[in-house]
Length: 178
Image (cartoon, rainbow, N blue to C red):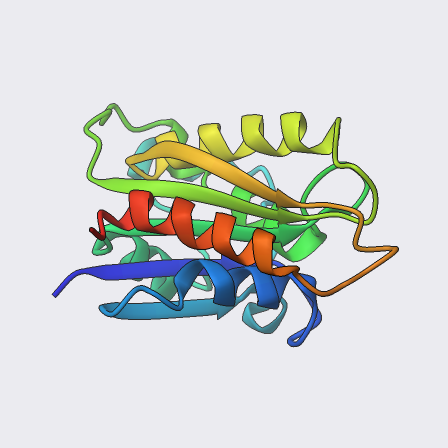
């Protein structure tokens, strides 16, 4: 059975990001694990560099998430935009990928996708977030397969039918559903 892991960086369980996750994943009929990063309470990286020698962070609060990611076929980052980037709980997770920066593995083992919601156009934010995501996916042995932006949520926070169809279409391609 294939497995997909979603890292949801939104504090709002019923908001725009949750709607986008639902539109993107509802066609996926395999195992789906969704982590709400606000519930994970991940400590920030303290820059101790202990991971440079051992390849692992001495703090264990990301172990469960990482285990699921490294055994998954698909990885999805889903996030609202906070100051042109990810909210702090997701950023803490990304910072804690430092041990994998030191590793030599470049073998692609999973596919990755980025879902973004933003209050305005997202014109500059998506560039920043895609760069961060590509780096993180590389460290997590995932191929960056694309992104989808649900923009202007300050004016409306409900996906329209055409946006849902677009998310479904991208998801079918991403998950390899015919």
